[in-house]
Image 1 (cartoon, rainbow, N blue to C red):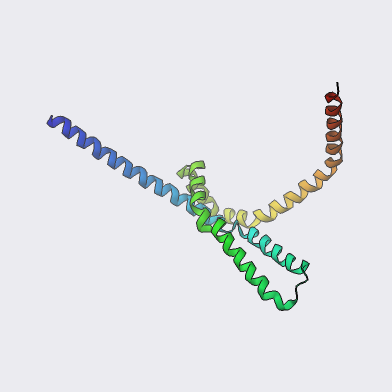
Image 2 (image 1 turned 90 degrees about the vertical axis):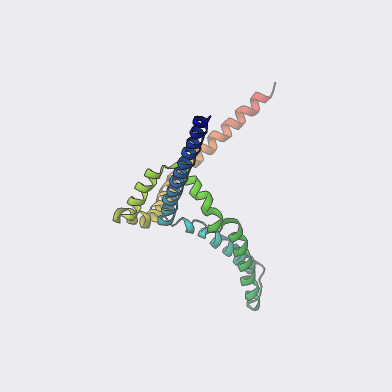
Length: 169
């Protein structure tokens, strides 16, 4: 009986130690994910949304032909909109979920390697140039896409016509 109790205590101690290690590993993994998010300025991902909402309010202000004396009202509503966005998509709201997303997607070692890259001169250059490259890439794609739109629309019309004729007995 004494042996079973000792074995039980050893097992419980082993489980406690292993779960403590898993917890430490999990914390370390999360730390690497958080560092990655910091390096790639993930806290700024929602900035364009705030700008778009501010612009919507400003456009509505202009559309209503509100007098300049009412600009304080516009700014008051823009502040309220910012507060609503903070509650929904503020960094402190999305940060934990993004950390989880990245720890589920990348191993701790992969995140460490990514962090090392983005801390390097080349990684920093990549972060600086990426928004411009993405914008210019979208322009290239959009320009090329325009030439395909008439053909795609024609194919869509042909398919619709063919489906319509197949419906008839």
